[in-house]
Image (tube, rainbow, N blue to C red; front, side):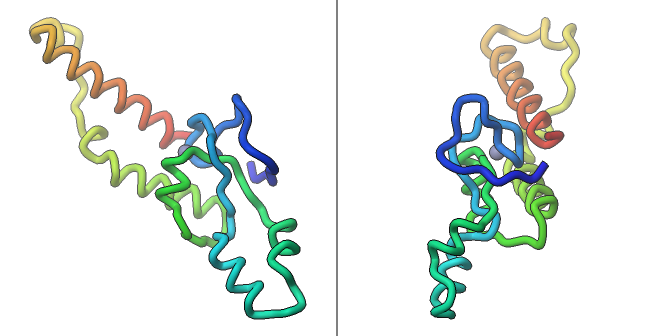
Amino acid sequence: MERKVSGRPKYGDLCYYCGKQATQIDHVIPQIMLRQIALSTEDITLEVIRSRILTVYCCGECNCLLSDTFTESLTLKKKLLKDRLRKRYIKILSIPTWYEEELDELGYALRSCVEAGLEKQAFIKRRLKW
Ligand SMILES: [Zn+2]
């Protein structure tokens, strides 16, 4: 599912890497590398390079986690991103399964806290499956 996008993401555009609402654009080849290429030759301007580069919509968190990362393919970049998401959310992902009977034994405040954690966990798992 590689695609070249242009302009700002619109409502409904999803992050290429995790499926969350996209708010930014990721340059598949980091801009810092493009600048270095443009500086190293007079034949290719930065504008020419920019007009031909591949970009994908992404969410702010994925864009931040990837930063200036360069990989040989988008598939590898997506895999790397998911490794970083797994590492970032390791505590939430390690929340054990709770059964309804167990939740019923908790007080309101603790139950709310556990359920909030489980919702976050489900959200992270959906992003990792994307
Ligand atoms: Zn994302």
